[in-house]
Length: 397
Image 1: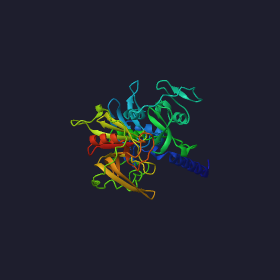
Image 2: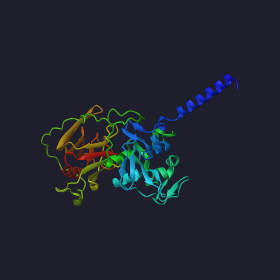
Image 3: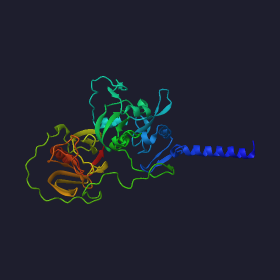
Image 4: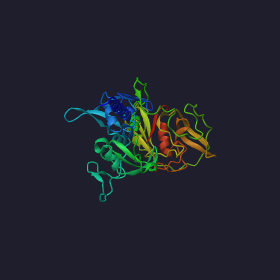
């Protein structure tokens, strides 16, 4: 071979090797990663990074929201935005990595149930699972099968239904290990079906530490940390660090509004309880739950913030309580005022849990408020007596 030809072949080989290495995603090359957006690491100490890479991690699991932790009865595990990875022993004793049943656990924690599958003939392409009594079909079965099917998402534990989500009103279906959502704006694209952020929601619900940690020197992947919490602005709401509201003037007497039946006597709080108290507001179901440790002691329907004034999600604490207050503000250039709002419990700036006498839309899916969590009158009265200043409030989908 002539020298010029040898040089040409060598140059082509080098170019081919260079282009091949450039085609490999950066996250597939690093030995460990740090995600600035969530502030957590992902390594292969337990095989989680390799599993994440081989299963289209950014799309199916999202970014990690905790460091590796030990779960009783499971072993090493790590929560992600959309799921959880676990290292367990296979039947032969060999260690394997699997996805955790975050959707089933999330549904159980909120005491949710789903209606049975309608008694109808199966449609073409539908798969029915006798173990759960539910089926999977389009629009979800294509994505479900392509992304791992039963092994990755588990079996269906609901039929498709319409539900309020963080992205708006969407058709969803729950599986053991994920909730799939159809995105109308992305119809016909590869983003038509998305995996919901139930990993993060379950971690928050269980009170796990999802606060960012400093980078230990690993390669960074993904967008930078958000500059501010991802919540919608509320017209006229003070900053989260605003001082406590001042005590309003004594209210004028009003007629006693109609309200739902009081909570069962067996759920009434006692002065001697020392259990940790927390409140969970589920925006998808429009329902509130009150816990003492892990025991549900009270629940009630709610009505939350309308689009554009959505009730903020996250973990908060009740920082101020007022037995009654006149609320006002400006929406779309129009001034509004609501006098004598009872049992007000502020947990984020101007956002509060409170009694509501001007509508009866609780638990219907309607979201008429300016960001606050509206409660039936007697439910708000019970909660006001039960929840002291500092009570944890978690708002989630």
